[in-house]
Every structure is written in structure tokens, then in C-alpha cells.
View 1 (tube, rainbow, N blue to C red):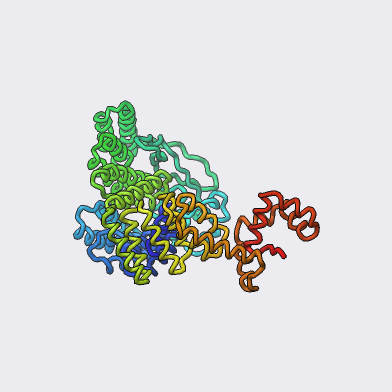
View 2: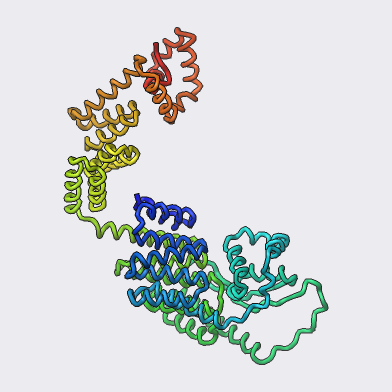
Length: 573
């Protein structure tokens, strides 16, 4: 069913298995081709794989099916953004906001698209673009020990492909030290990046990001080092500003640890005024607002950090950190507003920047909270009883698919009613869907172990699957709770007839062959046949009748022999 395939796709997406997610969403679409949510989800999975053409196609279909749904335009904007079609992305996000003006995901996407469009117009052709052209690039990177390991990292490979496709994209990735190292190898020069102090963790356990300095280029062939020149003017002033801002940040960190939040905010704000090229000051201030419960202020700071980070081409981990913090603030607000969609979307965007396990965990928690909330809002036992009665009417008319549909709705309305599971199991049995029927019957017994219908449904499914021993066991368990239940007693009788038929050797060759094939698939039968003791017993049954008689006096061995006879593996003559 489409819902089951969709659930599998969501689970695969949450675990980072985007290829499987695409496959599951495709299966769901084949079953429900007009469901706009399925196309939206598959678009997100394609985007996570950087398959932006496919993501765009699915996003367009989403908007076509549901033009008044803001999230469809969010998917459309993200796909255009991935294809570097910045103006189209701006248009998509803007149209979405016309429909849903309060959607945080659309607002954030629009800010990203505008910043990217601005950078694109300002960016000059990259002079190093030729170094990334042709298959020679991969050969050089593979041959050099310093870059060979990077080729095992999917995000690095994707960055290289993006740069090959459009050399101007190099400007977007220069802050990544792996790209700098690769550029050095391709140009036959050595890049060395010095790092200053670390970005201190504030509020959340996330990876620290070193503050930046301009890379220095050093030719591989060593030359006499020139005398250091004194620093003049702007360079000296810039370094002094950074040191001063760093000092304010450290004071803010100390105040934060003491829970002197207002003081911490003052220091981080001062650091931002002194040095506007380090977004860690903004994310740290956002963390303070989060701790104080000022979630709107936290979100504003996170949006500002993302926008400024895009402009500065900051480390993608820092951008992801800001988005994760924003998601956390939205999650706090969602406990009151009951709207988890912006939370989920923000965490998903953070994961596209950097796949952090903590962010993934928070995404899973938000999706779980959303699902539980939807179930709570949908819960209505009275409507569940009405739907079950409708299903009963269709069952009497032998319209089993329609009956299944109403029983399914009854289960959604009241997931703890064993009667709906029992009735749907009966429908599945009529339709020949034995695995589904068995699953519903077992759920029925789980919800109410004293409900005799659950045992009769399970036993019937096992009987039709020709698992007569298992069916007999199920019927007998049911009789412990309801000893006079005629349906269970009839089930036992039918099982005994089939088992005795095998014992007497009255099976036709076709029946014997089918029963043996089914028996060989039973793990219990497999264990019996591979047991050295039982193999000796079977040998004695054929060659040593006296020893066989002794074996038959052992109840456990006798029970196993009976199991083999019932399955047609062993025949007594």
C-alpha cells in the first residue's frame, strides 16, 4: 500500500539512505500517482543526492498537483538553487510566501536564494577553472597521497564535480581545506593554512570550527625565505580587530558558563560590531537567546548567521550549526504551536550542509513528535466504531477491498481496538493476502490476549498456509481462554484431520511434494534435520528398530518425529 511504502521512504530518508528513500517513494507514487506529498518527498530525496534535475521534475509535479501548498514551492526553490538557477529559486520561494506568508522554511530559502544570486552576479570567472577540467584532474588527485583519501568522501567528490561543471563554483568551496589541498595538487603548488584559536562550544555539543586566515602559497621547490616585512595599514588594523573581537567572545563565553546571559549578549554583540566576518559571534548570541527562552530572537540571529555565512562563504559546518540551532528554537516553539513542519524542514536543510549525527537525531525526534501529534489529533473511538461497522457491511456483501479500507480507517481512529484488526485479518484471508492477515491477527492478540477471535483468525491463516502444526498450537492457546468456543474447536478438528492424513500416508504425490517443500522452509524443521541426535534417530528408524523403540519413549524426540511426519518429510509405514 502507498502509505506503507511512504513510511519506508521516510524512514530511509531519516537514516540517510537517500537511494532507498527514492525507491520507496517511487513505489508509493506508482500506487498513488496523484498524491502531491509523495512527489514532494521524492524531490527532497533527489536533492539530498544532488540529483537536482530529478528533484526539479518532482517539485514541478508537486506544484502542479497542489498549487496552493507552500511546501511544494519550497521544494521547487531548493531544486533551482541546487542547479544554480538563482533567479528561478527566488521566484519559487516568493510564490510560496504569497500562499503561506508565515512559513519559516520559505523565508529562509528565499534569503539563501537572494544571497546566492547576489554572489553569482558579483563573482568573476575563476582563473583556476582550467585546472579542474578533464579526466586528468581525477588522475592527479588519485596519484597524490595528500588527496587520495578525499576521493572516498562523497561530499568532496560532489564538490569536485560541481567545480568541473561550473568553474565559478570554486569560489563557493575555497573555505574547505580539502578543496584548497586539491587545488594545490592540480596547480603543483603547496597551500598552507594557519589556524588561530578554536570556536568555543556554547550551548550545544557540536564540532568547533577554527577561525580563518588567508591561505599562504608556497612553491614546492624551496627558495630562500625573504626577510619578514613589517605590517602596515589595513592588514595590521584587521588583525587587531580580530584579536579584540576574539577577546570579547571569550568574555561572552565565560559569562555564559556563569549563566550571566545579559552580560554574555553584550560581549557577543560587541564582538559582532568589531568583526563582522566571523559568524560564530552570531551563533553564540543565538545560543544565549535559546537558553533564555527568547526563541524569536534566536531564530533571527540564526537567519542572520546563515545569510552572512553565505556572503562570506564560511565553513559549511558553521552554516549547518546555525540552521541546527534555529531548528532547536523552532522545536521549542512547536511544543506550543503543534507545528513541526518548519522544524523538520530546517533540520533537513542543516543536514544538506553537514551531516551531523546530533542534527539527524533531532530530526528523527521532530518527525516522531509530529507523527504522534497527528495520531492524537486523529484519535476518535466513535468514528472508529462507525468505520468498523461500514467495513462489516462491505464484508457481508463480499466487497473485501472496500471493507479493508474502512477497517484501516477504523484502526487509524482507534489503534487500540482489537476488533478492527481481527476483522481486517479476515478480509486479508479472503483476499489471499496471508502475510498481512497473519500480522493483523497477531496484533489483535497482542492488544487483547483473551480475545478468542484473534486466535481463530491467526489459526485460519496458518491453516490456509498449510502450517497445520502451528495452526493447531494457535487454536489450543485460544481454547485456554475460551474452552467452549466452537470456532476454535472446529479449527482443532480440521488440523487433526490434515495431520492424520499425513500420518496415514494418504497424501497425493502433489500434496506430499508441496507439504515437503513448505516444511523445508520452516526453521524448526531445518533445526531438527541438522541436529546430530535427530539424524541418528532417523537412521535408527530405518536400520535399527530396537533402538528406534527406545527413542520413541522420549517425549521430546517423539514430538520432533511427529513434526517431521506432519510436514511430509518422514513417512511411517
